[in-house]
Length: 228
Image 1 (cartoon, one colour):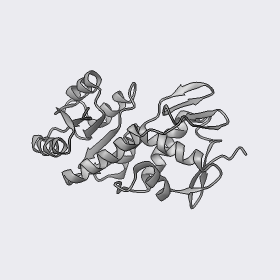
Image 2 (tube, rainbow, N blue to C red):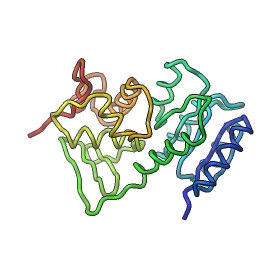
Image 3 (cartoon, helix red, strand yellow):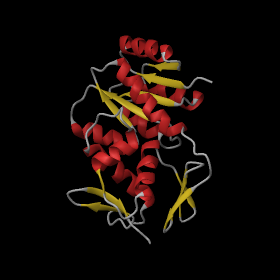
Image 4 (cartoon, rainbow, N blue to C red):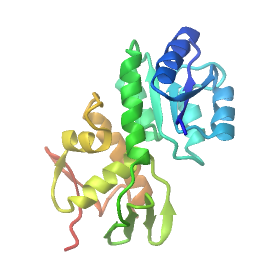
């Protein structure tokens, strides 16, 4: 069954171009041109991935992302004409998995979407898990619990947590974490990792302001506490 992409942008030519490329690549597409329609389609159709423009009429992309993240971990790639780093970081902190700055190549968008979907739909041959203190990651089911309570993570957050826990005690640079989370198709700023780590700490740390699991290694990047 073909995977479905929800494309949200108020510029119809951009939407039509992306629809053509995604359909040629074997995807099914859904389209919306404003925030209200985007939320309705996202909840009703449950797409496999959402391409979400930042500047939308009625409800902007940041608010749409915020509302979707209340009850869904569907991968979200933000499309933005804004170049201010603050806007991008806000989107990532709200739970977006990636962002692409306009103007862009539709071929690049398809490649980035495939990279995100690979992380979402990848499976392992046998059940396996990672545990450290109260944090348990079930890699087979792609589920995370903290003190036996389920925690909803975005695909990017799950990939980062997995990479950190697999390398517990070993500092990973932002570049290494970018590669682990996004793959070769990602061409972003290493600073975006900081936004994802902040979001991840808020979800798994007892005190995000004084984290005990995901530790900052100044001048390098981050590492997960080694319990061995």
